[in-house]
Length: 163
Image (cartoon, rainbow, N blue to C red; front, top):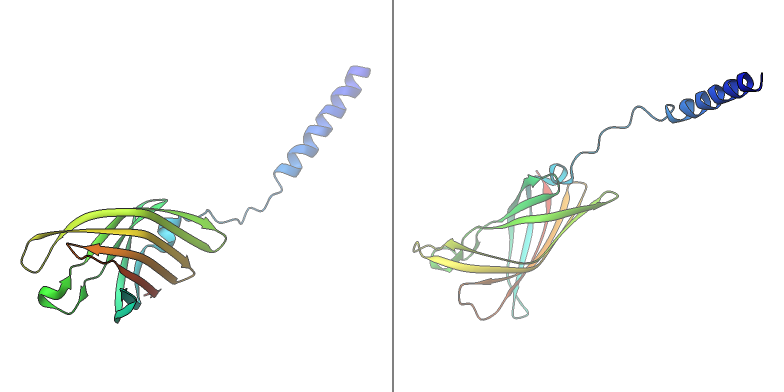
């Protein structure tokens, strides 16, 4: 009799436990990967500061492309005064992303590459202190750019909205 009573209690306890674990919210949507949430084109204002002075203040479009669920590539549009005074568009690759609530951030200490200038020559560039902050359809990007043999860095801030 004790075994039968014990088995009944065990079945009742298992039923209660299973009932509580299966009563969760079934309408939770699957989490969309952070890179998917931010990928796209963002248009806005780009301000470039050189040696403490504003060098340019233009409307630009930055492109963010998903590389993996947790990283993106950023394409910085060309900048400058045209012709030989233009820095061509360049990529910053594999920027890791993290999410905290509705804010997604990305950081890269340093990234280097080469691009072809207006003469078709390879020019080296290095971006450092890259910081991205996405919130809803907005992005803020900051970085420091050294291009070619330029002795000074170009401090850049871009604030844009996804198209």
